[in-house]
Image 1 (cartoon, rainbow, N blue to C red):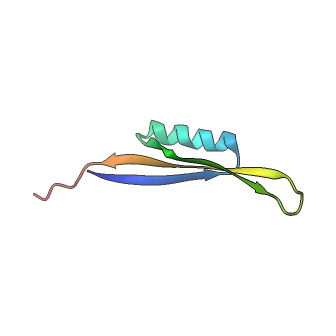
Image 2 (image 1 turned 30 degrees about the vertical axis):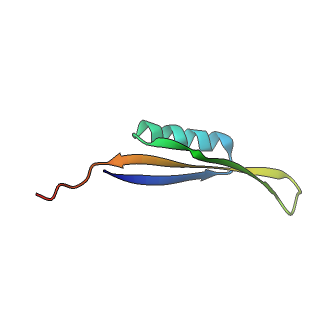
Length: 66
């Protein structure tokens, strides 16, 4: 069985979690070891913002070679 991998990356936590829940509803599973939150500083304002990221996997059945 092969797997379909999707990377979810968002600056907004609410949008990130919403997209993760959407993928889970489609049958994807989160690879928890790939979850990360990376702080970044906006060079113009000095404000710290965060990038949320995780890989999601969805098993795909192998094509049977008939």
